[in-house]
Image (cartoon, rainbow, N blue to C red; front, side, top):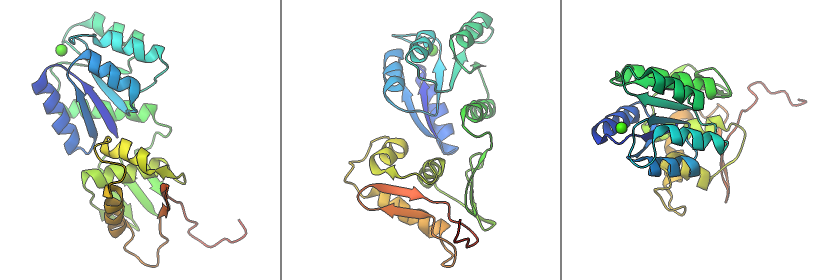
Length: 232
Ligand code: CA
């Protein structure tokens, strides 16, 4: 899950970033409104945490611009305490939720999960592919009932593959979603992480292989029929 945080208070922005990264989100930060709007317009995020009072362009204008451009990303406004009008205006402009400052990190993540669930095609917090289950709350994977611990990048990569189950995802879209373009497309970083994931989730040689390499294109995680049913 890729989150954009638009917040000019650098200490607060870093606190949110580090906290969310510990929860295995991929986080980008913009410290002013102009940069925030530009990033939100040109990249895919799963959610945006948006401060109201920002230098350059304020949070309300950003929501309005994004919605006018047809971008439906879930947005949670970070509002000053007591500013009821701000909350109403934000929601009217198309924000999904607001969080009054100061807030606890637990509340932030709970509300974030909630707007992500509401926006997602499925309400479940678990992704499934055959006997592989990925819990998007705890970030553990399970296969054949066995718990598998994943690193942040392993989780982000597996989540991206599973959200695109049975579809081929290109190397460049994997780089965009999981590594934020911080690697050259020619780099073998994806292959390294695919190998690590396979070593974790494909330990049983008798179980069907889930992650397929599509030569020259990318990867696909594939739902394999558990019971052989050749005629289907
Ligand atoms: Ca501010």
